[in-house]
Image (cartoon, rainbow, N blue to C red; front, side, top):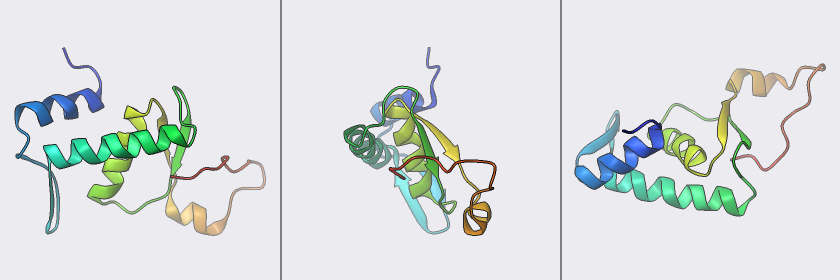
Length: 104
């Protein structure tokens, strides 16, 4: 039984590699491509210190590439923390500390 989103992606890529996984406007990513991309990004994140339980802050537009980055974070063992880009532009609240780099 598949219980994690990233495992569903891997299983779908094995079963239907050329089937469309993500669509946004004219952009389409196949399961094969998305699986390969997320594995590469996960290894990159791990090389930069993402381990089990790491929080990775994400400030990004809503695109297939952002979804790939979120899935990669899960594959690397981390958890993503979506940051509203409007909040990022205003600056961090005085009562909180911005997350530590690296930003992905």
